Image 1 (cartoon, rainbow, N blue to C red):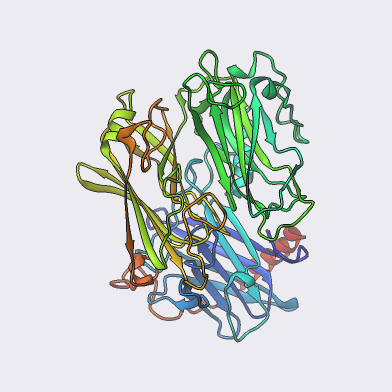
Image 2 (image 1 turned 120 degrees about the vertical axis):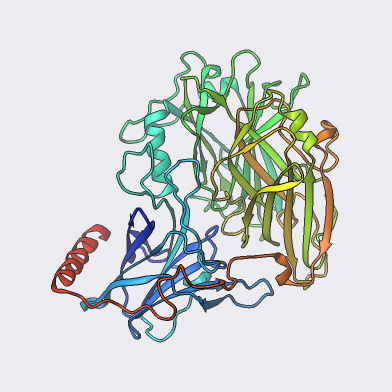
Length: 558
């Protein structure tokens, strides 16, 4: 069950199953204390805007397929009824004590641009789905905005592989299960009660040497599933196999903008000495989830030529200049002494060094593009073999509204990943829900960031490091690691072949953003029906089954 975000005594029970292996359907059941309506939404990154919604109203007895239109022009988001009604209502029950149960199904892929595709997320490396559920006792009106979001979660609809569970679980539980089986322990790297300064933007740096890693002994979970790192063999024999954001609950996490972990192979003081560069390992921001690497991939801490120190950089955001705020956020590193076949690398694209520092994003709607030439991968992939990108994260700040990443081979686009409705408060660095993909030598990349500056502020919005400034960065986690493939951006003089070309374009309006979600379908052939989906008449068996679900749900939620 999922708890009401503002009332822990209230909750909704969500049950689902993947049915009909030929057509690939999903069946969803919701049980909630409400007399008016209940709504279920598939969200792109956790935000309301751009969500695929289905809701049931007791007053009409109808199931309605809908979607949320964006409010990029500053107005309110709107709930629009879909042209094609792809959900089929199986049964509904509104009993005593205002308890409402609804069961419905639809195709995983309806071929409808007003619906979101439900992908097979059983593989650990594919990001989970974001869901939103809201409900009300009001029978006449269905509202669906940020203030009405009652329950939110990231879940996997398909039974996860390498999991102890036979049914789908939320992402934190999913990663926990994998780490119980594959990690020998964990090390917590945290900011020890760091006093957040009285300024809007602060980048705090924390350095952990090899000896620090030996001394960072974390407490085991209650079930003793892990043993703590005791230094036997030295941490330079360990592989990092999972990462988990640690957000300080005492500070509320509201001041943590984002955090990044870097590895230094040249200095125990995180100075990047000896000609060695510091390379990115893991990053997170608002809405980020833990990550379990594939069973044959890890980040190698060392031996000769290995990592000598790890640097944690946390971007704090304190716009109200609040005093006496102390933060102990950080990152949990799961490790194993068992060697893994592939070493993990991280490739940063767009403007990772903020070479556009001080430049304006422009008023109104704008598009900023960064082209990474094929010479970068041709020279940087020194092993001569293809690499596999496991995860891709897209990062902008609060004026970002859409972001796309295109992979180009021999002059043609072979893959495009998109976050159509970027909303930083919900997820500052959302992972793209896509399968892992191959990169060959000579492949080029083009990153496009779309912004909207309403023009109400006297000062223009600039690119920069501050919370109120903008960025445009893609993080690709890949394997096997290439020693010279780690960054591509404007003016990158260290590796001239990885110097990106930059261009900008002023857009006429929101319609130039190029969003496809929410457009009209060519036909409703894949839909279950056009118009309202009516409930099926309940047989005695169905009524009995519903009552059983009713009893089990109360037991489960309370």
